[in-house]
Amino acid sequence: MSLNDTPSASRLHITLVGKRNSGKSSLLNALVGQQTAIVSAHPGTTTDPVSKALEIHGLGPCVITDTAGVDDEGAVGQLRVEKTFQALRRSDVVILVVNHADTLFIKEWQQRLKGKPIVVALNKSDLMSDAVQQAKAVSAATALPVVCTSAIIGSGIDQLRDLLIRLSPKSQEPSITQGWAEDGDLVVLVMPQDREAPRGRLILPQQQTIRELLERHCSVVACQPEQLPATLSLLTKAPDLIITDTQALRRVKTVAPKESRLTTFSILFAALKGDIDYFRQSALVIDGLTEQSRVLIAEACSHAPVGEDIGRVKLPRLLRKTVGEKLKVEIVAGSDFPDDLSPYDLVIHCGACMFNRAQMMSRVNQAKSQHVPMTNYGVAVAHILETADLACSGDKG
Image (cartoon, rainbow, N blue to C red; front, side):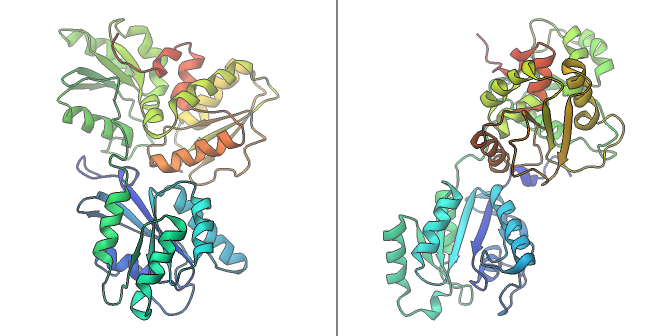
């Protein structure tokens, strides 16, 4: 990946949802202008979600996902429907595809989607003699925007794009360094190069942070933890901001100039992707953990660990050193996140650089709804090392 590429986590995620044979795949192909999804008259052709990354004028970088029919049946069908729900967790906008004015079905999905922006596509409208009247009826009953579409004749596609532009959040994510760096600042990045990172590439949080700082005309200096004292000695002034990898926080804090603001990549991404206030509040739970407590550590990606991985090795070690060696720590990765979090006293999530905000917030809201505290790698480590102020805004004054 080059610095010019837009990662999936930073793209607008649009998901098509509907019953089998409602024409979701044809609509996807019409939207992206190419044969991305397999189209068949046989219901249930789409099994796993099919995604296409592209740029749409007015929307910017997007990922559009076709999903299996939500009325799929049988044991395998239920697995397909679960994949649809997984896709919806990372969706910013939903296109609900129907073939008639099925207001009960649409209202059911309004409730399930819990406030996500929805546009109703009354699809295969070329086969309806009263499509406009049906669209008006749906709009009146649900207060949702409705567009009559036909992938076969290409009608309604431009209107659908216009609705997506209108419904999409104007800014998908705030600035990574918002509240920490000002335009033109001198910023030092402390970046251990783990063996997990592909050779010749920076890990995603480092890459995205560098790109943003350069766009803000900051002067960026990068080094590994052991080089930080020498790097600081070469500078003519103390850096305005130091951003470090969580695993190097203890070492960096001992040598960082007092006048420099200090934070971690993980804390920056906690604010970017999740609920930083909830994470800070939940980190206080660490003080009350005992050896009988259960902690869940969740990673967004599912890389094969090499050496002393932060989530699988270093963080559990730090927790057990703080709480006690018998503390129960469980680890999940990727999409393997439990539906029931109630057995856990605390969830500690990674920075979620591989998730978009919608996907991370779905996990945060799940934890909140089940009254289970959730924090983040960087916030948890900062709290344990008694540097909880690092999780606060870096605004001057």
